Amino acid sequence: MSEEILKALMQLFALIAKQDGGIGQKEIDYVRRFLVQQIGVDSAADYLQLFEDSVEQDTIPHKDKEKKLTSVLDSVKVLKLCKQISKTINQRQKLVVLVRLLELINAEYPLTAQRVGIVKTASDIFRVAKEEYESIFTFVTSTEDKEFRSPNHLVMYPLFFLWIPSAELYFVKFSGQMEVFLNGLSMREGTIYLFASGSTLRLPVGLPVYYSDIASRFLSDRSPEKITLEADHLSYRFSDEAKGLNDISFNARQGNLVGIMGSSGTGKTTLMNVLAGMYTPSSGQVRINQIDLHKD
Figure 1 (cartoon, rainbow, N blue to C red):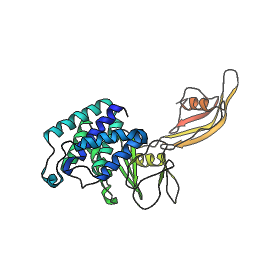
Figure 2: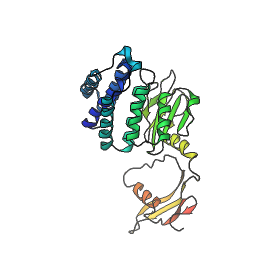
Figure 3: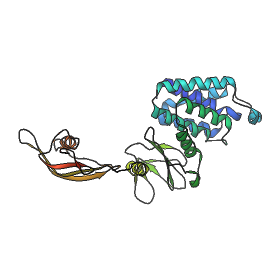
Figure 4: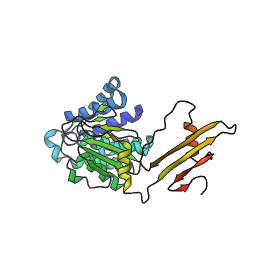
């Protein structure tokens, strides 16, 4: 993230945290982890100080927190910051920011109307659909299996997954006393992680969970017809009769993660060009849902 966006986010985080009595230690810890993840330990201190300084300005006394509403001044600041952020980042990044805002308000105190209202304002400015906002909200704030009823949720205890269809984004968290690793790094219980393409989850027992496994689970109920790709005894010769492919066969279904490996010059690019229809094979077929790509 750019310096401009990080500063705006720290101010927005601060406006949320200072509602209902001010900042808690868990919120400070959450912002610190967020900054370390984004920019590293060495650069995080200055932004964390900006966050803490911004919270201290006009913080509502703790004893009056239940009687106070978000001030008009704070509301104006929220609108300005959200619009500033919205102009600078794309929709996928806006959805990630929304998840982080909800994580922040869920970190320390019980959810309150003031804090939720600020996040909802951000969601509206980011043009997040109501159904997606509700599924994100439930995913971040809930811990009970029975609360995950949206088709955008998937529970594979101890793992919980969120799918945001509009941006093809996936998030994951886990619950329980065990070690879970995401791409080789230990996860914190309850913390929400972006589950990016190519990611792998490993638990103490059982097989790894791959990104393609989760994507295909979500998409299985949405796609009326599965896409299949078949390469049937493909061979290809270049114009000088040099052999590019020799009797290649494989098949894959929608949602599968397929790797093509080989040293330089072994035909990986040639194979991709044949599969894409750019090259016509000397023999064999490429079929998509049983339709010959080069003839039908």
